[in-house]
Amino acid sequence: MDKIIVSGGRQLRGTVKVSGAKNAVLPVIAASIMANEGKSKIHEVPALADVDTMSEVLRYMNVNVLSHNNTLIVDAARYLKTEAPLEYVRKMRASVLVLGPLLARYGHAKVAMPGGCAIGSRPIDQHLKGFEAMGAKVHVGNGFVEAYTETNQRLQGAKIYLDFPSVGATENIMMAAALAEGKTIIENCAREPEIVDLANFLNKMGAKIVGAGTETIKIDGVDTLKGTEHTMIPDRIEAGTFMVAAAITGGNVYVKGALMEHLSSTVAKLEEMGVTIIEEKEGLRVIGPEKLKAVNIKTLPHPGFPTDMQAQLMALAMRAQGTSVISETVFENRFMHVEEFGRMNGNIRIEGRSAIIEGPVDLQGAEVSATDLRAAAALILAGLVADGYTRVTELKHLDRGYVNIVGKLKQLGADIIRVRDVQGEEQMIDEEDTENEGKISSL
Ligand SMILES: CC(=O)N[C@H]1[C@@H](OP(=O)(O)OP(=O)(O)OC[C@H]2O[C@@H](n3ccc(=O)[nH]c3=O)[C@H](O)[C@@H]2O)O[C@H](CO)[C@@H](O)[C@@H]1O
Ligand SMILES: C=C(OP(=O)(O)O)C(=O)O
Image 1: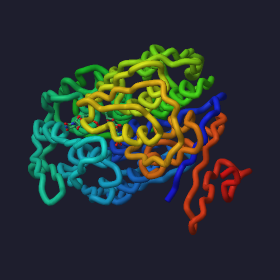
Image 2: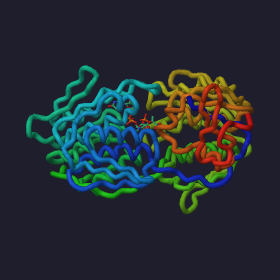
Image 3: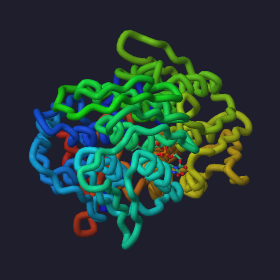
Image 4: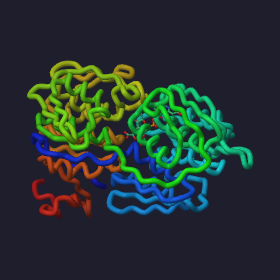
C-alpha cells in the first residue's frame, strides 16, 4: 500500500506547470472513437490512471491506442465492439462517456451501470433521457445500460432540456448529436471549459456545434467524422489545488498554465480570503497572506464555484480567522474529508449540506485516509501546514487525477515523499527524486 508523507511548515516558492485537464481529456478520448477515418493525435494528455483506464476501454473495443510522451494516438477506423464491461466502469465512471459515441456510430451501446461512489449517488438519467429523445431505446438491467436504435436507423436530432446542467450528460448528448440526423438543441446545458474543449475537438473532426460554453448548444448532425489533432486545455482543478498550496503555506508560487478565464470563481474566493493573485503571461502568481480571512462558499455548476475545489478550500478555511461556511449543492455526499480533517485537529461541523469551519486551528499531523480524489489533495494541503507528519493513505483516488503531485510539491520546497510498504518497511518510490531513493532517511 502506498502512502504520502508530508511534514508541515515549509513555505512553497517557485514555478509549477499544470498538466492537461483530466476532465477534458476523458470525453475527448471517448469522442475520438467516432472517427471512422483517420487517426486522432491528442497532445498534452496527462499521465493519469484515468487516462490509462479510458485507453483500456478503447482497446477492449478494438480501437488502436498508442501513447508516446504526452501524446495519445487513437485509430478507431476498424469495426468496434460496442460494449464496456464493469471492470472499467468500476475503476472510472467516465467510462459511460463511450455510450453516446457508440450509439451514434453503430446504433448500439452497452455499458456496465456505474454505481454510486463516495461523493454521491451520481445517476445517469439525464444522459439516457437525451438518447431517448433522439429516438434510442434504453434498457437498464442485469447491471448494464443498453441503448439502441431500430435496425439501420440513425439517431434523430431533438430538443433536449436538462433538468440539471450535468457535465457528463451534456458531453454524452453532444457527442451523440454530432452524428445524428438533423438538428439537436440542448438547453440548460453545462458550461464548463471542458465542454468547450470537447466541442472544439468535435468541430475539428467535422462536427457542426455552436454555443458550447453557453446555456444552449446547437448541433447540426453530420454523416461522418474524421480523426484530427488537438492539444488539451490545462487542468483548472490541478491549477486551483496548487494555488491553495501557495496560499495555505503563505508562499509565492507561479502556477504556469493556470487560466484566469477558467478559474475566476476560485480566484474570487481566494482573494476574499486575502490571497494576492497576479495574472502573468502564461499563468497566475499566487502569494499567500500572513493571515487568511474566513469565507462563505457555495458550490455550483460553472461559472459558479466548482465542487472539485470544495475540499481544498475547506483545508484553507481551517487556517482562516473566524467562521467559514461551505455549502455543497452539486453532490449530496461530498464531505467525507471532514472526518479526516477532524483527525488533524480541524474544528468543522456539518449542518445539512453546509460545513461550518471554525478557524484558525493549529493542524496536527495524523494518519488520514483519502476518501475521494479531491479529498486526497485537500489532506495533502492540510499536511503542508500541520505540525509533524501527515500520512495520507488510499492513494488510488489521487492517482486518478494528479500527475506527480509529490514531485511537483517537492520542487516548490515541500517536505513530502511517497512510500510503499515493502515487507514491513516504508520504501520511497518517488521516481522524480533520484538523490534520495531507498528508505526514508528522515523518519
Ligand atoms: C469526468 C468528469 O468530468 N467529472 C466531473 C463531472 O462529473 P459528472 O459529469 O459525473 O457530473 P455531473 O455534472 O453530471 O453531475 C452533477 C450532479 O448532477 C447529478 N446528475 C448527473 C447526471 C444525471 O444524469 N443525473 C443527475 O442527477 C449528479 O448526481 C450530480 O449531483 O462534473 C462534476 C461536476 O462539476 C465534477 O465534479 C466531476 O469532476
Ligand atoms: C469527481 C471527480 O472526478 P470523476 O467525475 O472522474 O469521479 C473529480 O475530478 O473531482
